[in-house]
Amino acid sequence: MAAVARGAGCGPPSRVLTKGGVGGQCSEDLKIKAVIALVAACALVVGTLVILKHRSGPPVTVTLRIAVTPGEQVGFVTGRANSAQFKYLVGK
Image (cartoon, rainbow, N blue to C red; front, side):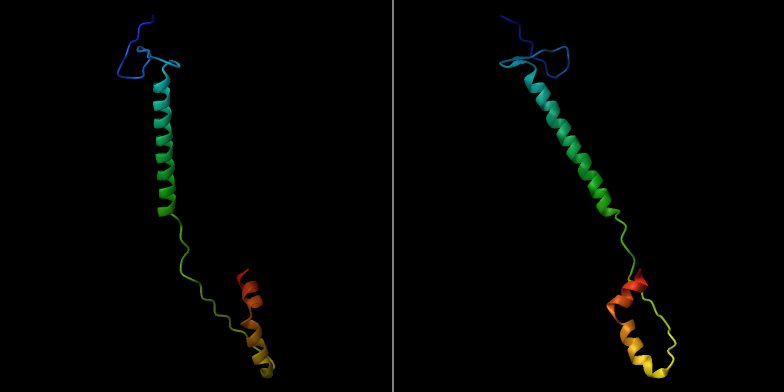
């Protein structure tokens, strides 16, 4: 029968014999610790990005002064200037 040495750690000097072979529990513990460390690191990075996220400033107000000749066309030009198409083209 093989000798069973039960050590406190998972280091190389102590070998633990289990039903499945040598050292089954030790490698699972290390995998769990690695996953926990990875999740913690990802949570830290995501938290930092959320907190330091660059937020846009206040909305911009633009005033355009347009001279209209002949004067009878002021209503037409005002209607076109308030249209979504005009605002899209100015913001482009």
